Length: 341
Image (cartoon, rainbow, N blue to C red; front, top):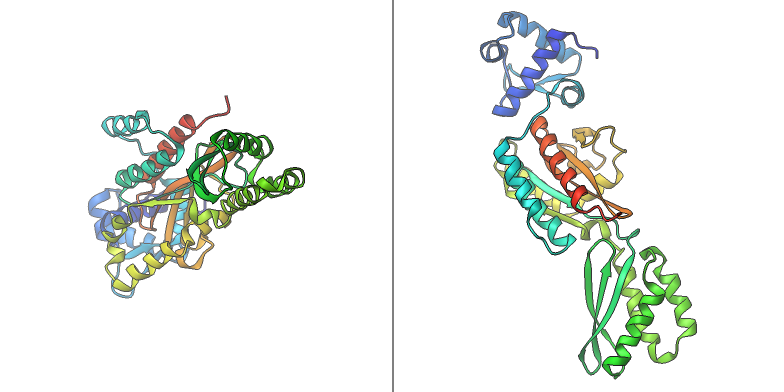
C-alpha cells in the first residue's frame, strides 16, 4: 500500500465521515471527531497529499474533500474493518431463511425484499442461468377441447407455464404425450432442447408434431432475454432518500438505468471479482449509466447453475455493513439451495 499509517487513518476517517453526512469533509471535522492525535493543520496537509495522490477530490463549492473512486477502492480492499450484524438482526434474518417458502422463485423475491430492508439500498437478485438449467418435468393439463396448459418444472425449482393448442384427446392420451415429451426433453440443458425436439419430430406421428413444436418454442423462449427476466429488484425508493438523488434529473436517470436493464448487464460483463462478496465502484463498472454507482454482490449456486444477490447504491455507501449483510444472504441462500446432495 502506498499510504503510510497516518494517511491511511485520515483517508478512512474522511470516507466514514462522508458516508455519514454526504457533505465534503474538512480537516477540523476530522480533528474534532476522530481524535487522531494530530492538529487540524497536519490533517489538512495530509488531505492535500491524499488529493495529489488521487485518493480524495475537492468540490468547487467547498474547501472540504470527498473520496475518489481510487480512495474508496483502497478503503474497501485494505482499510475498512469487518462489520458484524447485531444478534437481534441476525436472528431476524435467520428467521426469514427458516420460514417455509414453497419454491425457488418465491424465495428469491422474498430475499430481495429482506435485503433491501436490511440495507436501505436497492437490492437485486439475478437468478440462475436458464441456459444451463435442465427440465425436471413436463406436464400437459387439459383446459378446453383444443387447449392445454403446458407446465415446465426445472431442476432449480422454477415453474413456467403457458397455454398451447392441442388436438382433441383424452386425459390418458395427454398423459402419454406428457411422458413422451419428458422422456426425450427432460434432464438436458435448455440450450440443447431445440436439437432434441427436432430429433423427436422425425420419429413421432404428425398428430403430435404441432405440440412438440410449441413445447420446443416455449422452452427456447425461456433463454431469450434471460438476464432481464431473471432479475428481481426491490427497494428502489430507498435510493431516493439519499442526498445524491435530490436532483430530479438524477432520479430520472436512475429510473431509466433500472428500466433498460443496465443493472443486470453490468453484472454479467464485469470482470470476475477478486473478493467475495464482490465490490465494484464507480468507473470500475462497465456500463456507462451505472458508473456513478456501486455494487456489492455475492454468488449462490442452485445445482449446476449460479445466480447473484446484492445491492446497488451510491458510491457513498457503508461498505463494511453492505459486505456483511450481502455475505449473510449469500451464505444462507447457498445453504438452502444446495441440491447437489
